[in-house]
Image (cartoon, rainbow, N blue to C red):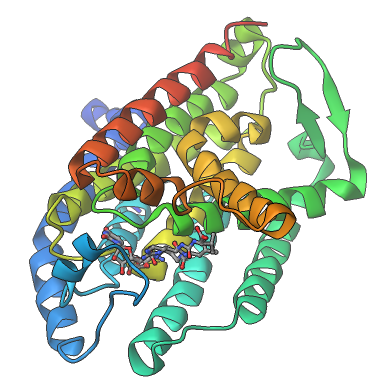
Length: 360
Ligand code: 57M
C-alpha cells in the first residue's frame, strides 16, 4: 500500500524513490512483520488460552513428555497469518498478480486449518481427511487459474525448469495444473505433519522464506536470471517482499513457540505456511528445488510413508514412531536437541538448493 502512496511523491522528493527498491521494501516487510507479531502475540495467546481453557490439545498416543504440554493453547498461527498479511499489504506492490496468489493461498489454507482447529477443540476430531484434502485441492486448483490464464504478453508458460540443466525446460501444458496442485497441497500437509515439537515447524519456515526470497529476487530480475541461466519470471521479484514478511512473522512466532512453547501454531498456521511455501515454489518455477528448500518437511512426510508402507508390508515398524521427530523422541533425545539438529539439516539443505542456481 505504501508503495502506491509514496513512490509518486518521488517526483518532487527524491527520498521517496527508496520505496521503489525491492530490497528496501523486503527488509521493511521483515521488520514490520516481526514487530506486529511481537505486539499482537501476547494479546492473541491470552485470548486463545481463555478460549481453550477446557480443551485438551494433546493426543492420547503421544509420548509422555508431551503430557506436560497439556493446557498449551493452539491456533497461534493466527499471529503468523496476521503479521504476514498485514506487512505484505503494507509494503508490496498490490497490482502484482503473484502477490495476490500467495496472499490468497495463505488466507485460504489458513481458513481450512482454522475450521479444522475449531472442530478439534469442540469435538476432539477435526475435519475428515477427505474433506480437508478436497478443500485444499479445490483451493489450489482455483488459485492456479490466476497463474495459468495470463495474457500472452506476460511471457509466462507452463514450463518446468530442471535444476543443474541449463536451458532445459519441460513444457507440461495442461499437466502443469495437477502437478502444481500436488506441490502446493503436498507442501501444506508436510508442514502440518512436521509441527509436532516446539519450534520444529517454524524454524525451517524462516530458512525457506530466506531461500525463496533470494530465488524470487533473482528469477524476477532479467539481468540476474540471464547471468545465472535461470528462467526469468517477470513480476516474480515482488514475492521477495512477501518472503521478507514471512521471515519476520516466523521469527516473531518463534519467540512464543520456542521450548517450552506458550502456544502451538495449529492447523491454521501449519496449513497456511505450507500452502505459502508450495505456492512460492510454483510461482518462482522452482518446484524441483522444493525437496531441498523444504527438505525437512519432505523427510518428515517420507518417514510417514515408509512407516505406513513398511507396516502394511511386514507388520513391523521401520521407525519407533513416525513422523521422524517422534522416532528420536522415543530414542531418548531431548526435545530442544531434536529441534535444533533438524534446523541445522534444514539450513544445510536450503543452502544446497541455492547453490544449484550457480551449478548449471
Ligand atoms: C499434525 N500434530 C501434532 C498442534 C500443532 C498419519 C500420521 C503421521 C498423522 C500424525 C498426526 O496426527 N499429525 C497431525 C501433528 C500435535 O500438534 C498439534 O497439531 C498442530 C499441527 N497440525 O500446531 O496444535 C502435537 O504435537 C505436539 N506439538 C508440540 N509443539 C508444537 O509447537 O509439542 C505441536 C506443536 C501437540 C503437541 O503434543 O498435541 C501431533 O503430533 O499429533 N500422527 C502423528 O504424528 C502420530 N504418529 C503416528 O501415529 N504414527 C504411526 C503411523 C500413523 C505412522 C506410527 O508411527 O506407527 C504421533 N503423534 C503424537 N505422538 N502426538 C504419535 C506420537
